[in-house]
Image 1 (cartoon, rainbow, N blue to C red):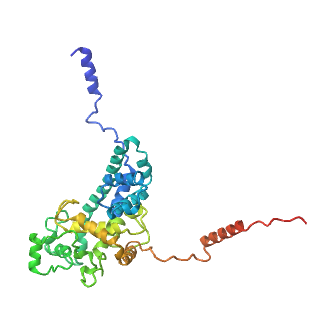
Image 2 (cartoon, rainbow, N blue to C red; image 1 turned 180 degrees about the vertical axis):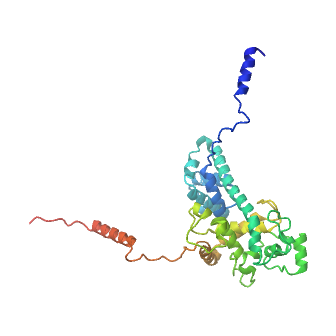
Image 3 (spheres, rainbow, N blue to C red; image 1 turned 135 degrees about the vertical axis):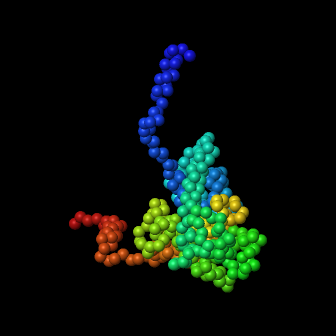
Length: 359
């Protein structure tokens, strides 16, 4: 190496960051707002959807298939399109970003889908992690301890291996107190699929085979988990207040959505199991079938009356200011006077001008 080259090389080495000096401040990374929307969408609209397929099929419906009659699509395709429309409504500017695709449409869809998936998966992972320990507090009877005790961060002893979690996970209609049944559930001889709903979904963990809707999705455990995720962990043990905080407040959420109830049920069920890692395709926990089976019932027209009553019940548990009735305005309030004056002005404008005739 020549002298000039050696000097140049040494100069380059001198420009390297000194290990004993504080390095340059790291520039804060800017998170795409779509991640934020993806988090809320996964919790409140659909937790396990394939965003790439959802966007691709949605674009087809808005473009090439726009004139196709609705009845030509299957029930599943119509449901998928409703979810796509919910996505467009909930994510500001998404439709414009999709429509500007042109030649790069495939790449744009893939990028948008990746960002939304990151948000939904991230939220699901955060909730799984935070519920893992908290669920033990809610299933422990007041003033007592779980016997044997369960670790907050290790799940291997949960599921049907433990008396408490086993009783809560036992499918409604199966007798957990029967020693033979208990043994078969623990050994896997009795396989529990996702559409066999567990007892913890019911108020007081009691199932009435003559009235299977009685208390369904109304357990205290579900309400605790819902508040933990949507209003704040600290709201679980406090009296509900009119103000909102946490994820509900961040996203302007003032009412419970049915998919969010299904999402919380899925999360609680997984928290009670012994499975260490959440996977939608896990055949042991069968979480995807469990989640979709709940959505199927919520969307069944034949169950509308029961489902509508359930929504009202949930809103009263989580959002105390929620009311199904329209409250009349106070007569002497400023708002009442504003409305009154506006009505008077509209009335004056709507009266045709008769004009003043000349004498």
